[in-house]
Length: 399
Image (cartoon, rainbow, N blue to C red):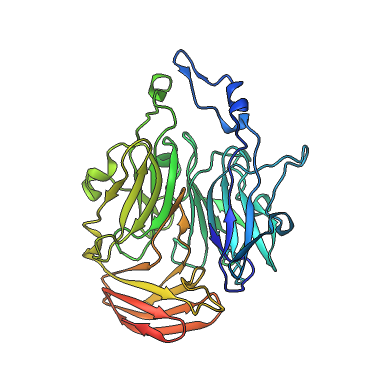
């Protein structure tokens, strides 16, 4: 996962590692599905691992994992704790430094607060994103950050194991490191509990200006339905529409009658990403299938609404060329949409670099503010809808 912990204009590299696995450890485990033979073993049977951070020193990478504070160990045995499957960066507290969320499998999640100069503090327990509402760890997979309420509060969504709800941890106030799990309050509780969630991301599938949520689902065990009647190996994708309403109807599950039958045909979903593959302005979806061909789902309805797309180019000095970490605020009428450019999200996936903003029925953007990684701010006004704007930090806009 690309990261920028020290604000020097170079892209550093953060690595989330899973269990410590060896054939010898695996062979002595008695992993069985009752009456069906050998099964995949839970990660609780294996030691954890350590995350890694490589600092980019002008093209030469230096391992600063230990001194940076991102290597977490158990308090008793001092053994590696991480069992990372999802990594998502964001400037959580608005201080201009990139923080990092890590979704862990069967152990607490991590939230690395960037203190500057390449130093991090792990604050997940204090922040409320480490466990479920009862204080227990879950099987975290894909994760993503978003201001999905079109306000200044930030949300971290983590897709979890079967019979565990997707967790939308939402900040209590703007630029806060305090979060609450609001799955039930926002309509993501019971509907997300049954499937085994892997890839997960926020995106505006219908371009109405509000961020929707998609998860790619699929179990680990091909024969799971023989021992758990409520579970299947192949599982349908879940798509939740952001209604903009406060309360339990905020996220509404979308079905075939709205989004078509193809998206919901059961698959063994793993990684998921989005991009405007056909260039029509709306976002198409790519899903990686375990032991099967990848699926490309073309979005044929999103462009009924208006949109703008932004391709950002940093100055290559105090900002990286791809403008990773840039913040964008887009104002249309009384609504403000916020994004931060990080393609690393979901599960083993990366989305396209251009940012897509749905405008609903509005035919122009009133104001667009870009805060580059260098902290320079570019302001653009009265942008026409249904256009791709290439914005250069040094020279301005090239349409």
